[in-house]
Structure formats: C-alpha cells, structure tokens
Amino acid sequence: MQWLSDSILSMWDWVFGFWADGMGMIQEILTTSPDTLGGGVVWSTVRMIFSAILGVGYALVVLFFYMGLFKTTAQLAELKRPEVAVISLIRLILTKIALDNGLTIITHIIQICQSVISAIFASGAGLSQAGLPEEIRTAIVSAGFFNQLLLWLVTLIGIVVLVVIIAIIIMSVYGRFFKIFVAASLAPLALATFSAQPTQRVGTSYLMSFVSLCLEGAMVAVACVLYGAFVQVLPEFSILENAPVLVQLLAYCVSVILQTSILAGMIQGADWLMQKFLGI
Image (cartoon, rainbow, N blue to C red; front, top):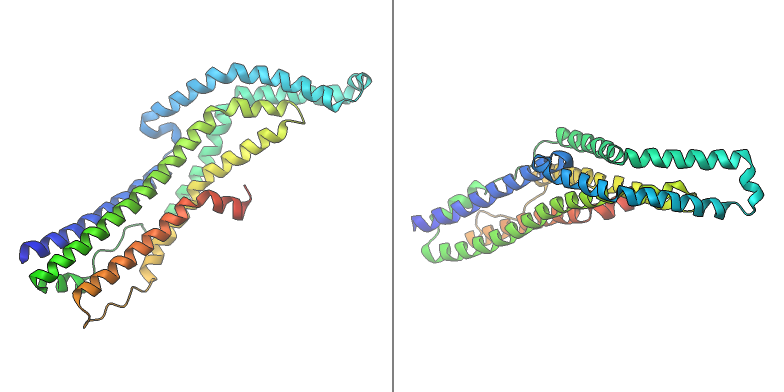
C-alpha cells in the first residue's frame, strides 16, 4: 500500500527533522548567554532578586567579620597588632567590593564559559542525525501490506522513544539555565562569607560550584560534537540484504535509540563528569 509506506517514511523523516531541530536548539541554548535569554527578562528578575537580598548580604558581612575577628584572635591584645587589623580591614573592604560588583563577577564567569562552549561547537562538524538508509526505504516501499502494518507499528514505537529521549536532553540543557539563575540570584549570601577566614570556605565552594555549573555546558557541547562524529563511524547492527525488512528496521531503530541514549546519558551526567575529571 503506497499510502502506508509513505506514512512510515514520513514519520521517520519527521523524527529526524525533529532531532536536527532539537540539536540545533541545544547548540543555540548553550551558546546563548543567560543575560540575553528571552530578551533578558529572566536576567532582569535575577538582578531584582540579587538587589533585594543585597542588604542581607551586607548585614552578613558585618556579622561574619566580627565572628571571624574574635574567633581568630585568642586575646584582645592581638586586636591591637597592626598586621591583624590591616588584614582584617583589607578582607572587609575586598568583600564589600565583591558584593557591590557581584553580578559583574558572575557575568564575567558566564562569559568565559560561554566562549569555551562556542569554541567547542566551532570545532565540531555538525550535530544533525543521518536519515533512514536508502536500503531500508526501498525495502519498506516494496513490502507487503501486512509487513507494512508491522513496520508502521515498529516505527511508531521507535519514534515515541526517540522523542522522549530528545525531550529529556532538551530539558536537561534548559535545567542548567535555571540552576545558573538560582545560583546567581543567591550570590550575595555566599559572597558575604569572604569577610571572615572561618567562613570563607563557603564562598570559595560557591564560586567553584558556579564555575562547575557553567562549565557543564562545555561538557554537554563536547558530548554533542563527539556524538556527531561517533554516529558516523559506529557500525550499525547487521543489516543484511537477505534479511526481512522488519528485521532491518528493528536493527536500525535499536541502533539509533542506543546512540541517542548514550548522548542523553552523557548530558545527564555532565555534573558528575565535571566533579570526576576536574574536581569542581
């Protein structure tokens, strides 16, 4: 039946087009700076939240400063030593400057990571997925009506699985943006901890975690670029000329699902990979 074979081929063409659009969307998301996403509306909200809790940050600076000052000086006489007073004063001033320019610091970190992501994508050869092999297309067209019904069912199941995997990948990439927005909004609370030596490890941990969060995009970009090269050399399941067309399509469908699942797993585990290989 011509209409049935055309329906099968159209569904595969659609899912590969959806895949290509999804990969293009991922690249666009990863190379878009958070402060320009959606016309900057979300980043404006981040600025408002940052400004709203900035006063709390200044109060914490004073609190942590006095806590650290009295914790690190065993006796009141040590407070009269010039080096102790100067070091404490410098720490307080630098923390105040960091709070005043907190969003600027955050923005520069994001821009550096964005340049790394853009460089990775620029070195790649593209992310589009190959279409259905011509041998399988020909076999589908020449198959009988009953076989085409089975092929249609296999195609439907395979497309549903692929759409779910692609949706998971896109949501994971979008989720990274929301993590960046949340972390940037709460920056004053973390930066305030630099005002005292006992609490500065919290601020250091925050900055390292934020850099790691931004560089997750680089890990995702590497995974996408490597995937584009990987699928070109990965041997497909044995598609024999004498095998039934149903077997051919099943083998190809399983191959594509496994390949996209590998990419989804790499993207889902980007944060774990950052901790494992870079220690941040």
